[in-house]
Length: 177
Image 1 (cartoon, rainbow, N blue to C red):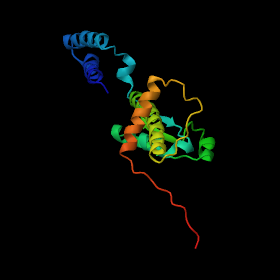
Image 2: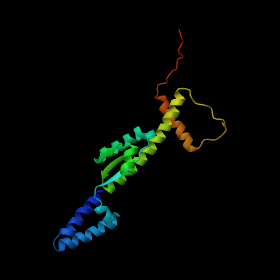
Image 3: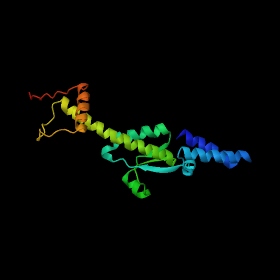
Image 4: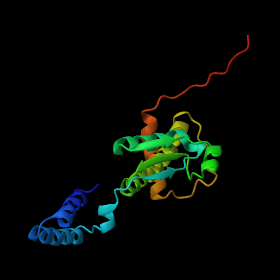
């Protein structure tokens, strides 16, 4: 939560409960602060605790769950789940994990969750490419003459760096006795 939103909440409390000139000055100061930092009244009153849901598909579950779990821990909010499909249908839940927090906190958690899940997906691709590189599992592309984009070159360089710090695995055929 922004320090300006917190300050605005305190000034609003003074504007609501203050005495005479104190009340008027606080209202003016609040109006000025809200305009300067683009704060809405909804931002000040958005402390109601609600339930929000996250749907983590089973094929991505473990790593995305860990990201959500870390974020929930950082923001110190309650999390419930993993709900089964049966429970989700029965109680009409929109996700297999539920958190209880204010809307402002949820929006920040959701934004960071989406960001880190996307970054994780990209890093996993780079790791897979590096693993294949290190263990000689890469297949030559059919169209070798195709020029790589800047993004593909960056992806290749990152994978190469990762592969340099990776142990190679050797496969030895088992010989029957």
